[in-house]
Amino acid sequence: MKIEILGMGCAKCRLLYENVQVAVRAAGIEAEVIKVETIDKITGYGVMMTPALVIDGRVKSSGNVPSLQEIKKWLEK
Image (tube, rainbow, N blue to C red; front, side):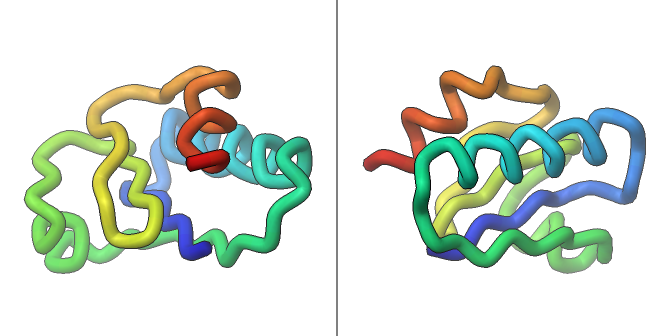
C-alpha cells in the first residue's frame, strides 16, 4: 500500500502524517508513507487545498485532517 501526504509542511500536514503513522501501526499493515511537498505533484492530483491524503493513487481527503477512525477505515478497504 502506498500512502501519500500532500502538503507544504504546515502544522495540519504534520498532524495528518502523524495520524497516518498511528493508523498504519494500529491496522498492522505494510505501507509506504510518503510526504509530497512539491506543488506540481500536489496539483497533479487535482488537489487545491492541503493537507490531502492519497491512498494507492486515490484522493481520500483534502483540506482537512481526517480522524484516526476514518483513516483506519480507508486502510482496511
